[in-house]
Every structure is written in C-alpha cells, then in structure tokens.
Amino acid sequence: MTKKTIQFIFRKEYEAWLKIKSVGAYCPQDKYTCNDGSEFLFLDLIGRFAKEKERFYVDALFQEWKSFIEKTFKDKERSNHLSYLNKYKEFVDNICNGTISLSTSGQDNNDDTVLMSVRESINKSRDGMKSLEMYLGEEDFIKLAIESSYFFSRDLVVERFEEIKEYIKKEQIKDIKDPGVGKRCKVHYLPARYTAKEDANGVKIQKRDNDGLVFFMHNSQPLCIIYQENARKKDKEDCSENTCGGGNGNARVCQLIKRCTGYALGEKADERNFKNCIISHIWGNAIDPRYFTNLWNIAIVPAWANHLLDKDETGTLGSKLKATIQKIIIDLYKLDDNNNYDWKSIEMDAPTFNEEEVLHGNYQINTIDRIADKETLGKISKVSIPV
Image (tube, rainbow, N blue to C red; front, side, top):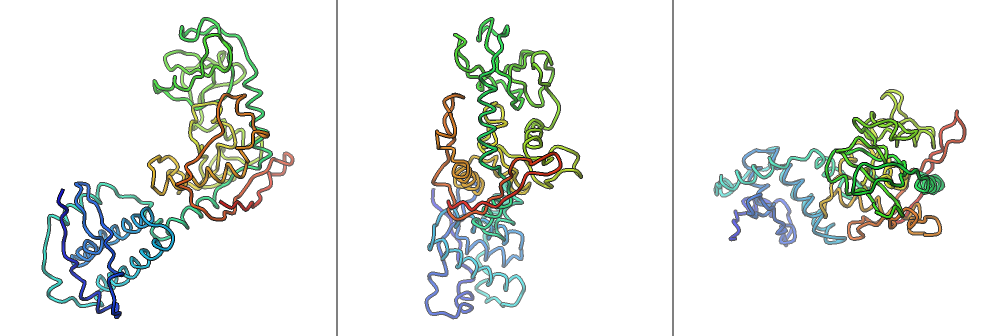
C-alpha cells in the first residue's frame, strides 16, 4: 500500500523557535497508523490539528506518540525520542495559546480526508487511562501501580498452598451423573468461580480410572463437585459442608483474607479496610480451584490499575504491568523453589511469566502478614524486590 504523507507545515517556525543549527534530530520520523493502514508523521498530524485549533486531537496524538515511543524504543533511544516529543509539545502549546504567529505557508496544504481518517481512528479507541499514562509515563505508571498494591507474606502463601494440597487429598466417593466421568468418582471440594460458559468443562482434570485429581464443572447438571462462587441453582447437599451461590465472584477469597489477616474486603463499603482496591487473580484461571484461593495468585490492586491486568495483548501497558507483577510474585514467594511448593501434588507446573515484557527496576512491595489475634490486624511491611 502506498503510504500517504502531508507536509510538516510548521517546520520553518519550529526551526526558528528551536534556535539551534542542526534541527534534524528534533524532527523524528515516528509515524501514526490509522485504522485504514495509512501512516503519517506525528509531527505532521499534530501540527495540522493545532492549526485547526482542535486541541482534543492534538492531546490525543501526543498520547499516541508517547505510547508508540514507549513500545518501540529502549533505554537511551527511548529517552531521546521522549525528549523530542516534549520539546515539540512545548512548541505546539505556544501555537495553541496564540503566542507564536504562523507564516502564510503554514496556512496552506489542506487535506480534510487525512484529518477525517485520523479523527475516526482516535474516536474508535478512546482510552481514559492514556491521560494518566501520558502524565506519569509508562515506567512511573507501572511502578506506582505495583507499589500501591498489596501482596502477602511468604509464610501465608506457603501455608495456603499446603491447605489446598490437603483439601485435594480429601476425597469422597460420589455418584456422578455425567457418563464422561463414570458412575462413581472421587470428589474434591474446593472453591472456584462459577462460569456458565460451555468451555468451563475444560477446567476439569479427569481420569476414568478414578486416579489422580477430578476437577469437574458442568453447567448442564445441578452438581457442584467443586463448589462454585456465585453459582446458580446448585444443590447444597452436593457442596458438602460448603454453601454455593451469592457474593460478587470473590466472596470466598474475601473470607480467606479476612480469616488469615483480619482485613475486610467484602463487607459494606464504609467498613472495608481497603478503599478503591480490587482483588485481582494475577494469573487468572479463577474457575480453576487450584488458582482461585491460592494466595500466590492473588493481589489487592488499586482500582485504577486493575482492569489493565485483564488484557492479554502483548506489547501493551497492561501486559508489561502483568508480567512485572508476575516476576515480582515469583521472586517474593520463591515459587520456583520445589522445596517450598510441591506442584506435582496438585498436578500443575509452577507459574511462569514473559521475561520480554518485564519492566526492570527496584520495587518496594507491601506485604500483609497473618493476623496476630482477633483484635489485631496483620502487620503490613515493605519488602524491596529487585527485578
């Protein structure tokens, strides 16, 4: 496809404003790609919208440019490009404020088709988080999100892992209606988040000879072999001593945290110990009972950052945040140490992360320790984790 281009309409004014002999470095060839595949220099587009006094698109394109730089360049090269962006932003601000007069040559070269294409692309992908990212920068954003989150002490994580392992060893023989499992089956009662999707059957680890684990969910049967958080129409009897249903999808996690640390997350809003924070399953898989209440998979994250952890697209702010948290968790809890965690006993491998997405640095992590007594909440400590 032949790429369109438009003239850098403010180049003469920009060169005069910079007051330096060599301005080439200050005019990077970073390009914005529209939804239709057309590419244009950020310098061109921003200048053109500034000329049209469309400040919304000027600011939006600066945000897109900064995101492009963060994703494309590293170290010194990234720093240089951000410096060029900030210098050009200062110049454009003067244009928008009317403190720089434009030459008549800068008033020509109309291309409404180009501007319409850019408007349509930006209007289809407005992201309220970008303004915060633009203000803080990607590195500071991720650092602030992680250092504002809460994790657990290693002792608590190991203790819960052992509890889950013991729960898995507890078995009851029960008649199972689904012929894929067999008439009778060993059942393990553990909490997991309910899902009505047909692919929930993929959660099961099933062996016809009744050896090993049986994690089975079937939305077409009124069974609750694994009692399912927020489940509907489930028999209390099938849940053994555990009741099903109700809650917000994390009620069992809230109960666990309350029992272990004393902190309330699922109570009334004005009684919660953590305000504007959300329980996040860092590796997801909340419909799998080995993940749902295992504390190594749980963090209490600021509400403004939590939704980014649901995104799996690589090369994004969300994927970098998730990979960095996962790396910190593995190091903090030493999850790759088989002396502490018998992963084979629950038939899974130790969790992993994408090294290429990790933002390296030194992080000050909040960890919550176990409750001392009924009147005293678990101590919150700072732990330094180099990544």
